[in-house]
Image 1 (cartoon, rainbow, N blue to C red):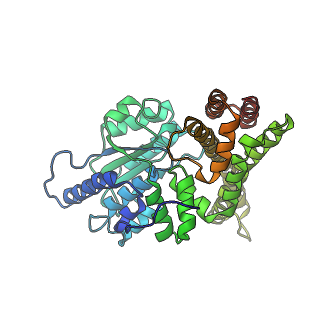
Image 2: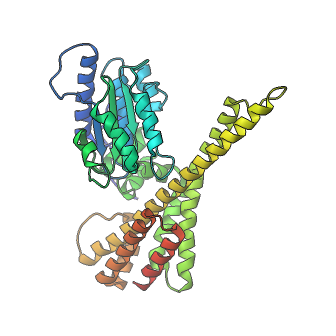
Length: 406
């Protein structure tokens, strides 16, 4: 395994959470400093701090991490994002009373959920300096939810800050009217050197393994961490990358499709299993569903009804997790065909999968650039089909058939 050299120290305070995002850190840190001066009643330059922010960037760039980090800096008792005070700790951990976090459990964010959030955001801060609302995956807002949010963004309470996270500021991701009322922070794909550094220094990953994970993760920090720390994730990635050269017989189509779906399901199950069980246990305990003695029958019935509602939300979340995990596998697959095109052209570009360079060279020798491009387009078409709610198994089987035909 080869990769970047692990050098340079991490940034101090809460900003160490952001990897390879120095321009964004400068903008957000400056705004947090201005926010602290506003709280102290000191004058600030017009526009130094604003009430609505849109954080955009490719998958894995750390949009939600940037939002939580900024929220921590706003709640910091020193006003600098020190990382050591109660405000910083609780905001980063998701337990701060004045930091509301919206993470879509299903495939969209409903208008009812957004209206409830807007009402809560209208209140004054209770323990912190600001009322902060973080909306992860703002591109999943329904039209009604977007309209509910727009009214709050247009007429924000004095000490409320909205932080929206989305892949881009394109109208398909965020409505033009909401975008026009937000300050844009664009995150970049973190360089491999920065990802390797944070894996080694913050997560304790062996440097050589950190360098390898950083070189093959496609700039996705969370993916790099999973690959570095979870052997099963490495095995599933290897299984996905065996598909392009493993389609020799017609029967291989169904075998490879099954492996791809099973890998996504295994990843999703592993990610949600412990969380689901913990949520159910906590809910039963909170509602007295595990109690004994007189008068607990009605409590148990109420607890069971609440558990059923929770299980419905968990099922929706599992569907989303499986699709997101499958999408990552498809991105890996698309990256392989992109590498084949690079090898065919003789370009010196860095490969997405440098550890599979020999397989890439073999495929480039067997396939024409035109057939490789058709295969790449089949993978992209599969991603789009799943986005439009085609059943994943049907979409994957159609894709694998196209991959074999070339």
